[in-house]
Image (cartoon, rainbow, N blue to C red; front, side, top):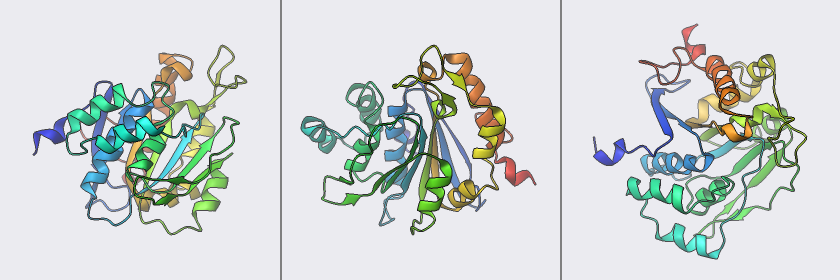
Length: 256
């Protein structure tokens, strides 16, 4: 294996796991603390799928939009990035991507690492218009108030591949306009399990198309590390058995 493949940015982990539908294939599930480091894994996966004409659609569940576009200077930095040097890419995520963890999605779209973008959000900001990348390609950008809305919308679109991206703060409720805060409450376990139920219309659409999955733990916006860990346990327990980062992780629905 190329030593470049073994690079893992600090604060991130990943597991290689059987595809949720086709067990003869394998995908990676990455866990990041700061959401912007998902960019590293999206780039890595796009490199591995370079023979595919279109990048995967991004399906993201997040309290925040994370759709701040790169400015002119940031576009210059992105254009100069060596996508084959994973050490440089990891450093770029830390040093150049927005420290507020809200610019990584459109930065990835700028380099065509991801295709169309679909975000289920709780933040009440206006959804940006469609995004044009470095080569002039148009990326559809859509925001939704619920997983049900997203599922209905994407069911009519012909995507061959998709990345599922989950920020654990999506499973919080907060009256604060920026999320988090001292009045934050966690979504109940039953609601999380229903959202990610492998037999649900949402996951039934995702699974056949899944080429990777990123989970951002973001403890600051989950009300602390204990809350973030609690949410991770519910998400992981709903989808995986044995759990992620164990000896041989697997999909819970494949045990049946």
